[in-house]
Amino acid sequence: MDQYRVFGNPIKQSRSPAIHQSFALQTKQNLSYQSQLVALDSFSQTINNFISQGGKGANITVPFKEQALALCDQLSERARLAGAVNTLSFEQGKIIGDNTDGLGLVQDLISHNVLFKNKNILLLGAGGAARGVILSLLDQQPDLLVIANRTVSKAETLCKQFSDNRLIGCGFDEIELQGYDVIINATSASLSGSVPPISEQLISHKTVCYDMVYSKELTPFLIWAKQHNAKKVIDGLGMLVGQAAESFSIWRKIKPDTASVLTKLRVELMLE
Ligand code: NDP
Image 1 (cartoon, rainbow, N blue to C red):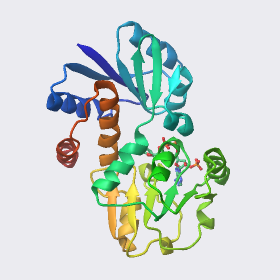
Image 2: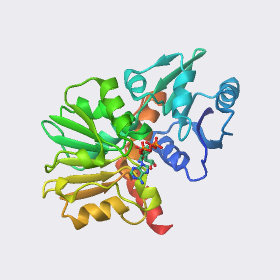
Image 3: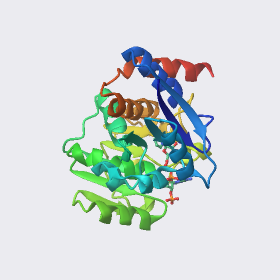
Image 4: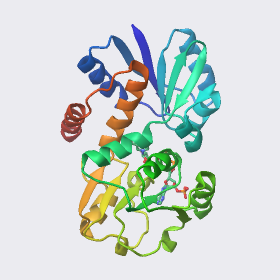
């Protein structure tokens, strides 16, 4: 049976095994997918051990996405630009890296009827998650993509790296005031119960607010967005399922249906 794993630290919370097992059942693929905790100093050794045991592919999560990139013999353009890899494939002695976070995000937003063409997007955060979605967002042909971050230099550096005149990097207090069409929170602020300190005037009646973090209840950012009359609020559970579906289709060359898996996962989350 083909073996896949997700590697991270911590890893106990990972929903990836449940998601991939659902995809495998649905598409009748004979595979096993498990999670594995990796000691902070033994990432490359752990991956090499898995390859020598016959592993076919892996997902990589916090904090190893940059280290995964360094291990690769071949990289997709989006992984190279993101500077991070969340999907590894092991083929003919080579390690091939990709990053499916951006597609997962964009497809989830599209499934909520959010369109990007000629729109103004505000991306909060400049960490790995933000980096991973920039190329996919630009591919959707927005007019403007503003990246705002607590550490301003990181947002500015990202803009330089992507070198696209639709990108602007700034701090939270420097964002030009206008009603954005989409505001995406790619910070981890919600995990600590806080909201990035941005003006509520960035929200208008047409603004869709998205938080990459998901939880049983609305995240602090989404509560804030609702209080300021955002048109729609969406959490990151759909992105999680979407990025997993992209990894699955890279490995198995078959695209699973995400809607049914997302519904099941949402119910499980609500029951926790
Ligand atoms: P990183 O640690 O790489 O980056 C964290 C980002 O959050 C940085 O921009 C940091 O700013 C900012 N930040 C942290 N705390 C605060 C705060 N209190 N106020 C404002 N900004 C803050 O993490 P990732 O980019 O990998 O992940 C970000 C979030 O996205 C995580 O919560 C993760 O769970 C989620 N995620 C969800 C996915 C999904 O599929 N739904 C996929 C990937 C990530 P600074 O640079 O100044 O430190």
